[in-house]
Length: 207
Image (cartoon, rainbow, N blue to C red; front, top):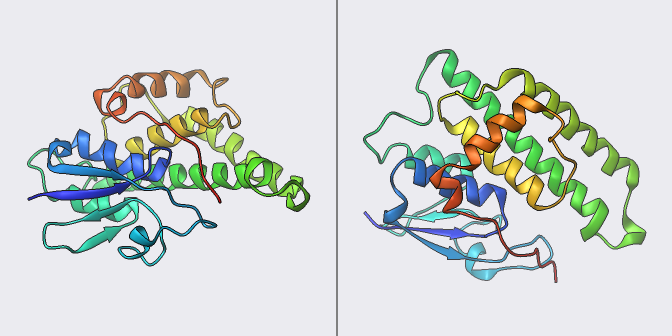
């Protein structure tokens, strides 16, 4: 089965799906096609596949499209013969999904901070909103420092978290580097082949 992934080289969500594919041993079956997207710059090719106009989008061999990184990863997890990267049951499942939710929130907060600090015209920025989102990052870093262990098994939550933390550093957003256990966990994950094969690059284009 051949698959096409509409991708963006500086999207934490798109990278999550691609890292998942590498960890599942599926990357060689996927053609990756870069697309620039932004809420202020319409990409017709992406809108034709996803009514939200966002990447990632996975186009299957029959032409059907799946979008949202959570959905794409869930689908990819059905295509390989290894141990599921989304645990099927028990406490491991709920912990992995909770971690994925935190990672999603971190990415959302980081994007919101960038709108208030970089992307929105200066006269329209609202510093208290930026500061509120920064507080979400810092609070989450402290929580993650308590719950992560460097030898944790790979799952969807940890893939989502690693790709998000990498993106936060890539964009120069408030750092997690004063949390020693979180840093140790992240540095070990970032050294994995799946992360080295999917480096972040490029700038956001809003116009």
